[in-house]
Image (cartoon, rainbow, N blue to C red; front, side, top):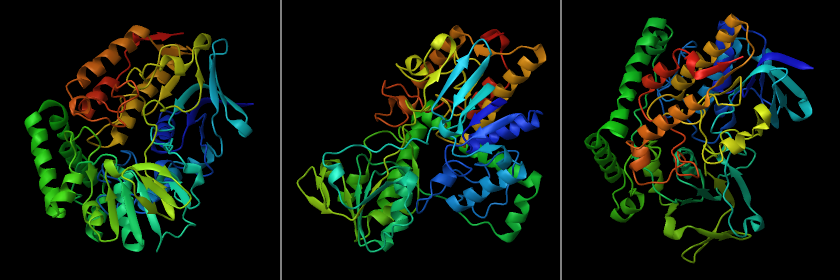
Length: 484
C-alpha cells in the first residue's frame, strides 16, 4: 500500500513549488505523481519551435530558486534547464512517481484520507492531495467534417513531433494565439508555404527581449541584485491591472500603441484590417512578439481570416468556407487547452459521494481558487480565478502555498485530521470575485476567450492586483473553515 501524508498531482512548477514548500515546512512524507514519463510540466512538454515565456525570466521563476538567466524572455530549452535545476537542487527526482496517470480520486471520511487511483501504478493514499496538474495541460483539437480522411501529418503544438521534418513542406497552422505566434516566425523561413487559419486576430505588443552579458549574469547570481530586479519587474508589470480594470483611458492608450505597432510592421492596409481585433485590448490574452507580424507578411505565408476558415478536410488538405482547396502536408493544431471547465480532468468524489463535476456543473469555483466545501484536505493549484493576465503566474502559485501550508500546519497543531472551507465562505468569496470581474476588460471587452467557461463567467483570471491575492492567502481564516 502506497500511503503518504501528502500527494501532489503534477510535477510542473506548481508541483515543484508545493514539494519545496512542504520540505521547508519539515514535511517530507509526500510523493509527486506525474502522468508522463519525464519530470516537469509545461516547459518540458511544450517543445514546439519558438516556444518561450512571455514574462521576464527573473520574474517568471520561483522566489526560492534564483537563476542566472541568459536572456530576459527565456526560451523553452532554458526553462527546461531551470526545471532540471530546481529538481536537482531540492532532491525532487527521488520523490516522483512517473507514468502515474491519475484516473480518479475518492475521499474516505472514516479514514480521513484520499484514495488516488493511478492506473497501472496502483492506488495511493494520503491525508492531503494537492492538485497541480495545471490549467494548460489538456489540449483541445476541434472537429471538422472529413478530419479522419486527411492523409498527411497532424499534431498539436503541445505534442510536437520532432521526428517529422517540416522543412520544404506545405504547412497549415490552425489558430493564431500565443503558441501560434511563436511557431509561425520559427518555421516560416523553412517551409515551402505556410497557411495560417485565424479565427479572430489578437492584439500584439513588441517584445523587449535582450541577452544578458557575462557581468549581468554574474549580478543575477547575487541574491540582493536578483531580488531588486524581481522587485522592479514585479511593480512594472503589476501596474497593467490599472488599465485592465480601473482605467479605460489607460487601456485605450495601450490599444493605440498596439495599433501603431501593427501599422509599423504591416504596411498593407488590407492586411492591417485582417489583423485588427474588434474587441478591447486585454479582453483576450495579449501577444508579446516582435517577429509575428513580419512572419505573416512573408511571400510564402498566407493568412486566412474567419471568412476563409475551415469548412472541412479531405485526403490532401483543407476546404475553406469561401470555396478554396488548400493542399497541405502537415496540419499543426495550435488550438489551445481546456483551461476552465476542464481544470481537473479526472473524476473527484468528495464527502458523501459528492462529485466535483456536479459542483462545477454551472461553472468552476473555489475559495481562494484553492479549496471547496465537501472536499476536505483537497487543494487546487492554479484553480478557478487564480490566473493572472499581467504578471507571473508563479507569484500566485506561491501565494496559494501560504494558504495550503497554513491549513496543514493548523491541523497538525490542533491534532486534527481534516479541514474544509464552509459553503457560505466559498459562496461569499465567489460572489466577490464575479462582482469585481464585472468591472474588468476580461468581462466587458467584447470578446469570447479561453478565460471564460461555457457559462460565460470569466474563470481563468483573478480580477485584480496580484498583491491583493497574496493578502487574501497570507493567513488562514479559521472561521471560514470546518476542522475535524
